[in-house]
Image 1 (cartoon, rainbow, N blue to C red):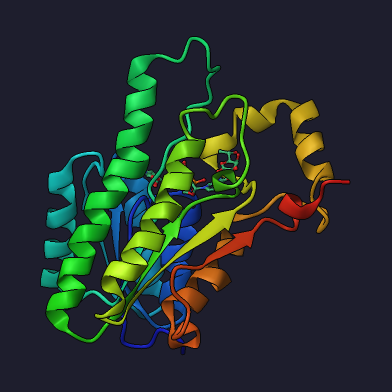
Image 2 (image 1 turned 60 degrees about the vertical axis):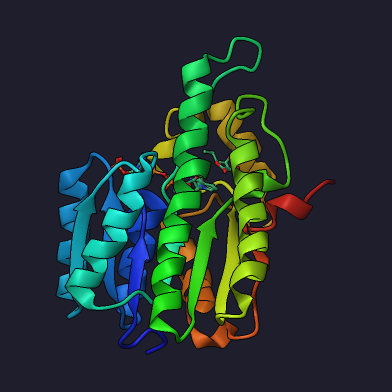
Length: 253
Ligand SMILES: NC(=O)C1=CN([C@@H]2O[C@H](COP(=O)(O)OP(=O)(O)OC[C@H]3O[C@@H](n4cnc5c(N)ncnc54)[C@H](OP(=O)(O)O)[C@@H]3O)[C@@H](O)[C@H]2O)C=CC1
Ligand SMILES: C[C@H](O)[C@@H]1OC(=O)[C@H](O)[C@@H]1O
């Protein structure tokens, strides 16, 4: 098993990609601590699935936009499992909205959850890994949106570019501690975050038509790439990014 004996922390793991990745890491041998902010039932269901795989799971509630959540999450995970080997920064929101009348609160909330939250979470996880002294892996759920724009995502795409930029800089800052820092760039993955947006059949068909592999993504499509970056298979990979988009990005014509 690629993650046997490792402790993995995942933010935003009560649903969607985070939940799939948390359960997927458990299937590869890890004990997993989940962060979530509101969905108690979803978080508990994810823990139950992890335990059904014979691993340990714990759900810890906290809004990542509050810097205090980061230190509390890491401290409680260490109390439960003793250490942090892998940290997956996944929590994120994308409240689609036009640019010209973007509400200040929507802009600021998106920044605080997706980028500020990531900064303090990554910092807290990295401090624990440095204390342990034997390296680690930090993975950011960035996006294809780090590379391309979206008309109704002017507040969101900068957070995804910023997240990858954060991984690049912390890869340098933490390399001396053998802590690797990488980004995943999912394309369009079917989750609650885009349920309303993709209810527009015209848009959905357009998005599907852009994908050489012929389908939109599922949360489980992120499991393999996450396990790869979490495991020693990627021991010489840091500061890198991996598109997980069915080929959408390269499909110009
Ligand atoms: N789906 C897609 O097409 C793509 C998604 N991504 C990125 O993947 C990540 C996961 O998205 P996805 O699974 O689709 O979204 P979902 O909406 O399905 O899940 C989001 C998760 O984040 C949690 N969350 C939201 N806000 C907070 C917060 N303030 N503090 C802690 N947890 C929070 C939610 O928990 P709760 O409900 O309990 O608050 C939930 O578990 C995001 O960062 C997103 O930007 C990137 C590219 C494409
Ligand atoms: C939420 C969107 O459907 C999704 O988020 C991203 O980061 C992708 O680029 C998609 O636009």
